[in-house]
Amino acid sequence: MIGPRFSVWRWGSFTLRAPAPAALQTAVVGTFGVLLALMLSLTLGESGLSPARLIQALRGEAEPYEQWLLWQSRLPRALCALGVGTALGVAGAVFQSLSRNPLGSPDIIGINAGASAGAVLWLLFLPGLSVAWGALAGAVCVLLLLLPGLGPQGQLSRSLVLMGVAINAFAIAVVQFALTLVQREQAQQMLGYLAGGLVHRDWQQVALIGLILAVALPGLLLLSRRLGLLALGRDMASSLGNPLRSTQLTALILATVLALGAVLCAGPVAFVALVAPHLARRRGQQLALLRSGLIGALLLLSADTLTLTLPGTQRLPVGVLTAMLGGAYLAWILFAELLRRKTKQQMPG
Amino acid sequence: MTSDIYSDCILQGRGLHLHYAGRAVIAGLDIYIPRGQLTVVLGTNGCGKSSLLKILSQVLPPSKGQVMLDGKVLADMGSKERARQLALLVQKPELPDGIDVQELVSRGRYPHQSLWRQWSEDDEYAVAQALVATGLTDMARREVSSLSGGQQQRVWLALVLAQQTEVLLLDEPTSFLDIRAQLSVMDFCRALRLQGRTLVLVLHDINQALRYADHLLLMREGRILAQGAPEALICEQVLKDVFDLDACIIQDPEAGCPMLIPRVDQYDHAWGVTQQPGYK
Ligand SMILES: Nc1ncnc2c1ncn2[C@@H]1O[C@H](COP(=O)(O)OP(=O)(O)OP(=O)(O)O)[C@@H](O)[C@H]1O
Ligand SMILES: [Mg+2]
Image 1 (cartoon, helix red, strand yellow):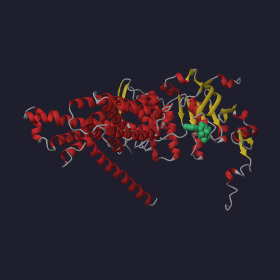
Image 2 (tube, helix red, strand yellow):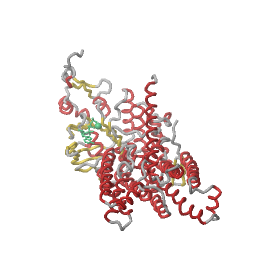
Image 3 (cartoon, rainbow over the protein chains, first blue to last red):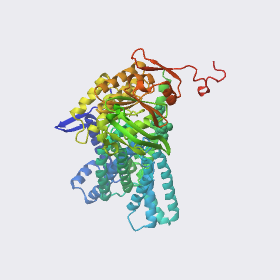
Image 4 (cartoon, rainbow over the protein chains, first blue to last red):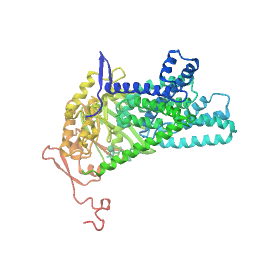
C-alpha cells in the first residue's frame, strides 16, 4: 500500500482535489520547522538575543539598540534566508523535473553563473547602475541559450543539462576574465558580490524575494498538474492534451525568475537547489514542489545560523557553507544508496 | 477511394509528410480510418507505424499535410478538446515512480478536467469503470512498478479507456503479453468496437490482425502499400511486397478468415548466425 490519498471537495460543478493528508503533514511539519529555525537563527550567535529579550524586542519594549538589531538586522536576514531558500528549492525541483535529471538544478545548468557573469560585466562597464540589471541580463541570456533545447515539439531532455553545463563553464570563464581586467578595489567588490551571503540584508531584499515568490509560486502551483503529466513521457503527456511547449516554457521562465531572485538577494548560493528536491522526493512525489521549497528554506536558514554560531565563520559567506555541507550530504546519500544496492544484490533470490 | 467503407471516415490524413532530421519517415501518405471499425496497421520494424499514429493524434505535427478528425482540422483543435475525442497509447509509455494503479489511470481524465473541475463524479465513474473493464479493481492500490509487464499493459489500456474517447489509437498493445493475454486484449478491443468506437491498432501478429481487423493498412517505408478488408487484401504477393515474406495462405480452421503460414528455408543466412563456426 502506498501513498497518494486524495480528498475531494465538491460544490456543484466546482470540484477540488488535493492530497489532504500529505498537505496537512507538510503544513504542520513546515510551520514547526520554520518557527524553530527562526527562533534559533534570532537567538544564537554573538549578536543573538536571548529568548526573553527577543520577546521584548518583538513587542517593541526593548532597548533601542536591540530593537534595531532585531528589526533592521537579524529578522530581515533570517527572512531573506527563508525566501531565498524557498526560491532555490522550488527552482531546483522544476529544473530537475523538466530535464528529467537529478543534476538539472539552476546552479549546475548555468543560470546562477550567467547571472554572476552579467553582474560582473555590468560592474565593469556600467558601474553607475544597480548590478541587479546585469544579473537579470545574464540570466535572460542563459535562458535564451537554453531555449533551443526545447525543440520544435517541446522535447526538453537530457541535452538541456549538457548544454547547461557548457554554458555554466563559459559563464565562469567570463567572470574569471572580467576579474583580471579590473583594479584591485573593484575586484574586491566583485568578489564580495560573487561569494554571495546574507550579511547586511535589509527589508528591500526581503521585499524583492517576497515579491518574486508571490508571482512565481502560484504560477508554478497552477502548472503542477501539467508538470506531473510530463512524468508519463512527452508523447503520452501531449496526447492527453497537455500543450508541452507552453507548459515547459512557462515553467522554465518562472523557475529562472526564482533562481534569479535568489541570486539578486544572496548571490550564487550553491547546492541548495540541487539537494532540496532530492530530499523532498525521498518521501514520494506528492507536493514535491512545495516540500522542496520548504526544505530549501530550512536548509539555508540553518546554514546561515551555523555561520553565525561556529567560531571563525562569521565572515564566511553562507554559500560556501551550503556548498560544503550540501556536497558532503549528497555524497553520503549516494554512497548509502550504493551500499544498499550492493547488499540487495548479494541477498539470495 | 470508391468502396463504401470510406464513405464515413472519422479520421483522415491527406498528403502527410514527416521528416526526422531531414530524413523522410512518412512520405506523402493519404490515410482513411473508417468510423466504428477496427483498423490494424501492419508493416516491418521502422516503416513508420508509430510515427503515423503520432501524426494522427497531433503528438507530432506533420511536416506537410493535414489530419481531419470528424470533419475538423486536427491542428486547429484545442489540445484538450482533441484529447477528449482521440486517445493514443504510445508504444513505450514512461512509468512515473511511486505511482499506484488508480492514480495512473486517473491521469487519463486530464482532458476532462480544469482548475475548477479537478475531480467530478464523471471522473470518478470513468476511472472505476476502466478499472472494472480491465479487471484491475483488486489491484487499484498496488504500485504499478510492482506489477508484471502484462498487468502494466492493462493499466495503460485502462488509462486510455478512462479518457472516454470515440477514437483509440493503440501502438502494439499486445507486445510482451502471453498468448491468452494477447487474445483477451484483442477481444477487449473488439468489444469496444461493438460499442461503436473506432480503433486503430499497430500489431505484429499478422494472423491476429487477419482475425480481428475490419480494415487493414499495410505500410512499407513510410507509405501505405495497400488497404482494405483483410480477405480481399491478403495474398501471397502482398505479403512478399510488404514483409519480403514467402508464405502460403490457408483458411483459419477456427474463424474462417485467411491465415498465413510462413514457408520454411527462407532465413538461412539471417544475420549470418547459422553460418557461425563452432555452433551446433
Ligand atoms: N525521434 C526520432 N528521431 C529520429 N528518427 C526517428 C525517431 N523516431 C523514429 N525515427 C525513425 O523513423 C522511422 C520510423 O519509426 P517508427 O517508430 O515510426 O517505426 P515503427 O514502424 O513504429 O517500427 P516498430 O515496428 O519497430 O515499432 C525509423 O526508421 C526510425 O529510425
Ligand atoms: Mg513502433
